[in-house]
Every structure is written in structure tokens, then in C-alpha cells.
Length: 182
Length: 126
Image (cartoon, helix red, strand yellow):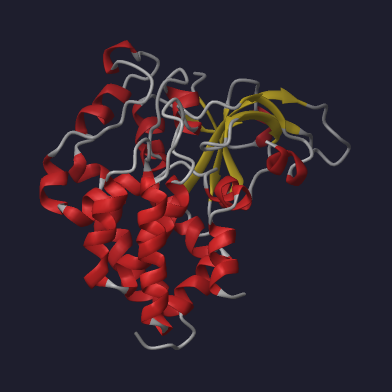
């Protein structure tokens, strides 16, 4: 699988369907890390600076793509995956990539990851964007749900990054790189 | 939906909305997403108990899924129980939201590999 094939697969509806069945950021990136196209892309990105620039270019293109604002951004998954790969392989490009990704509308995983890369401290003090379809006060089916939402400030929401990202950075990508030193 | 149905023959779609996830479907009236990491807290604080035997299972109970690491990965509501077979087993069908991919009626074990495997059932019955 070459880079173009890996990127095409990462941007495919099948990939999106497969990794978006999960319900949480840690689970999402765990699912992403298992995908053969991501494993291949991680190997390629560690091998070549050109690949890193291609990935940055693709992040910029996807961030600027026109979307139907009535729906979630169809590029959320590839943006999150490419940003995630850039995070490990090209720290010098990572913040630039994150600035573009953060401006992509109607994203979820890409926005969360981008905001944390740009400003982890300030992001953690901001109230979480946990509500999608309504007012917190109108949800009454779970007695502990209100407690959870109250405590879901970014320190809670981004705990997955505190734990997962350094772990992925130190182990997963190296595991995925098949001995290619970064 | 075509991708899901091609890989999961028992899955019947109920909705393709993506404004809630499996946790939001079960605990929040389909109105929001809640991270699956909070499932343990919700089960304990809302008075759920783990069923000791599958024979206790009733419609309305929760099917809980875990990944190999033991972490919670998915939750759904039991909506149909088949008759017991001679060996004591029976078909269990659940209704669950597959992340952003929509809400499906499906056999309990016919799910995407990223959703883990059904490991236990919980109930809020006293």
C-alpha cells in the first residue's frame, strides 16, 4: 500500500463507518490505531519528510473544504487521523496543522484533538461541548447524568489525551513503525 | 448504512441520526453523547446490578460490551429474547446506537469488532 492508497482508504466511507461505531475518544483512537491504512501511513510518515508535508497539505485542504453546514463534517475522521499522525511524527508541523483543523466546521474528534494541541491548558478550563441536541436541564432519565455533565469540564473530557496520547506517542506509533526509528 | 448491513446481516436500521451515541440512547433519551468511560459510574449510581445468570435476563435489561483490555466499549438495550434451546442457550437481540453510524436492532453478538464483545447483562429491576 502506497501513501495515496493509504490516504484514500483513510478518507473512505468504509473507514469512517468502521471507526465511528465507537462512543468515546479513547475508543476512537484505539480503533484508528488498528486500521491497516493507518499503520501503513504511520510507517510512511516516519520515513519521509515529504510524506509529512503531503499530510499537512491534505489537512489544509480538508479543513477548507466546503461542507453542508446542516450536517456533521464528512472530513472529521480523516482530519482527526491525519492530525493524530502529524502529532507524533512532525511536532514542528503539528501546531500549524491543528490551527487549520480547529477551523473546520462541524467536526468532533478533529476539533477536540486540535484544540488540545493548540492550547491544552486553556482548553482544559473551558466547559465541555457535551451537548449535541438539547438543554442539560431537560435530560431527566438518569439520576447521575447531571452530575456527569457538571463534572465534564475539559479536564475530564481531555483526560484521554493525558493518558492516551502520551501512551500512543511512546508505544503505539513506535510499535506500528516496524522498527523504523523516528 | 450499506456498509453496516453488508457486514452485519442481522442488523436492521432504526435511525441514521448521529446526534447521540450508545450511552446517549440508553441513559439520555437519545439527546446527547456521553463517553463510554462513564458507563461504570452510571451503572453503579443509577442502581443497576449485574445479572448472575443469563437465564435472569429480561427485555429492557442492558447488554454491556467490553474490549480485550476489559474497558467498557458499548451498551445496548435487550428487546427480544428467543426461546431456550436444549443446551440452555437462546438468541438475544438488542437495540443500540453504533456511534455515528446509526441505531440498529441486531443480534447481541453481531456488532462491529471495534464495539467489543457482549460480556455481561445489567438490570435496574429490583
